[in-house]
Length: 595
Image (cartoon, rainbow, N blue to C red; front, side, top):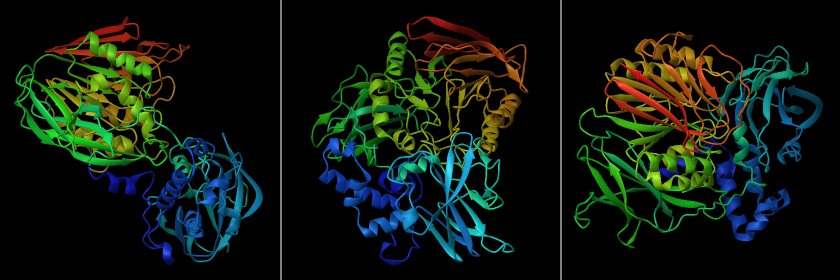
């Protein structure tokens, strides 16, 4: 977990929006800075109802000329080495053309670009050698943001683009078959005018619409923070035998946090006390709880196999949480159980399910979720619901998760997710810390993998982890299913599945497609006879979903829709038992593996 929240949020939220090379008095101002200032003015001058019915005119009334200059020029920047025609290609269903397009000299060409889902109009402007600066997608949170094509003015010039902001800009060729969104590469152009063909296309990310989207975007959390700690969450950042990470939330007014813990059944007054680090988190559009403090404390040098009670709070104000408990892993490789849940989407149905599992099986050591914890990963009110519904469980048993595409918010990465959890920092060096990681419990090894990052970038790390681990049982958890009749992921099968084959991962858990499936044991993408020969792939879902017809596929052992489930896995020496229970507590699937 990154501890320097405010700095991290400024740098990472949505896109790295720090510009150091702009001219004039706006040198150090960014789109994010300006939008934050505008929102502050709106909070000062508008009621909550007025914020909900905001118009472009309302926004412009509190926006200075200097603000507009930043919003018109600091959203997308690059350099060109020859004179160029720049084409802004904009979804025609966006009702209001972004304010800066015509004012900065772009003309509507009357041309049309199409893909399978959208029709775009085309705006054109000629730029000399040097810097091209483009503005925001608009004040409406219009998801299909504009993209850009660039062509030379002079036919024989050779075009070079450089100094991109945001960084890591992909450059393709403008033509039929080109993709225009980094987070939706399957969506490609089907109609391109001859004038644009052969130019350089600059795809964007649909989530960038949120950088300036204010109209209809203000939200209210049903669970605002207070001075009393809540959203208490157990995770592991290190060895489950000797450490425990505890996180919680308070209002911004509370400046201090500590954990007091003692042996369960012992004298509560003989507690140990650990200070916590505070994160300031901001959700600029959360009108009733914009800022919170989120605390993290790491307990170390604990005794294996012990149960402790604890409270969190502030000794200066004497405001404390209710008492909860945590258990360290036993020293030996003893029998244990854990629960797996598929997509939870901050649903109250997920809350009912996890509480049902906890009540029925209190011996469970920890819980896992395979991504899509929330509907929108950059909306903190979604996280407030997720934690509220599961609060009684996650303060008493650790929760270990992986991010899904919804946690990554339309291609922008799971940035708020990273602020919420404290996981091991032992993942691949070439992706953000804690998105992928590993841990051991009992005689089992868990690979927790992120599908919000490149599959290939993680393969070498995965192989090293599997090669060097001697645990009897090996599991992998990630969001996208390698085997599914819809939205299967052949790259995961190729990159990760081949490693699961090589080092024999027993089971791989995923979600995403909202039904339940247990595959036959798979090796080299083909069914094999026994679990000893291949990996069993599980898809599960923790929220209501539709029962639907599914075509026959050779890899399926059991599959059904229409049920939301939790999966309890028991590991006892050479035997593994999986039981899948629905929301009525009925057993929907069960099997054993014996080694």
